[in-house]
Length: 305
Image 1 (cartoon, one colour):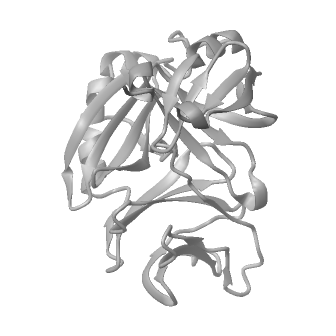
Image 2 (cartoon, one colour):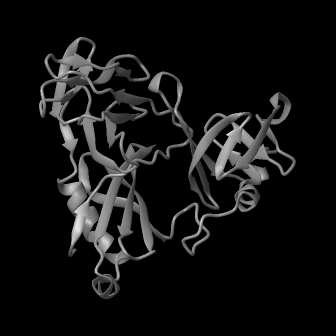
Image 3 (cartoon, rainbow, N blue to C red):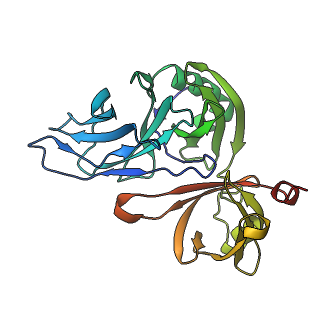
């Protein structure tokens, strides 16, 4: 691939997975400082950033009080966000890194537990294989004539049946085309990419580069959505029914200025397609955010006989 620059973007897309964001705040570099730990669901493992002198920051993964992995990763003067995606079987943790000064991500790791072996970093076998496949999205002649460059962003998005879900975004500068690729990969065989799906245009756009209107977003949201634990029925009068059959509760929703409001809480719409709705809390309490993914469902799936 010619004229390609690497940039890693974070989009979380598991089925209603809660992703804790760790904010590394700018501090004096005189002494090593530790940020708040992100713990695994079972409480056995944790991820944290240890701030040292310039260029000596580290991402630290621990089992209890024992450090099992330490990865050098400059945080920068403006700080960084880290997102952790723990595999359901407790064997791996995928970690995305994003500088707080921009929306694109920077790095991604897969760490085996409890060994602490780092299985994936941006320039290894997984990235090289993805970069080759991204060529299918790119019109080299058009790109050359426009004088643009290719920016690729890779993000871990969740786990499914022992495989890591990912999204590869392909951005072409000076060209309105945006290609994104979804797939899964087995941590122990990073060259074996499965469920490969290529799409064009931004998932939340109208397909011509324009942002959709609030009413268009509202129409696209109507219907049944589901997560592993709940079913959501979004209807046109601003009501949302949550739950299955007898345990249904009623909540309120609306769309304003391109944002999804659940009651009065605003969420950024990350992805909205005919099959998936991904939305992320704006800000969050104490630097923590939540990202939700709902999968389009049918009434039959929601209320089986």
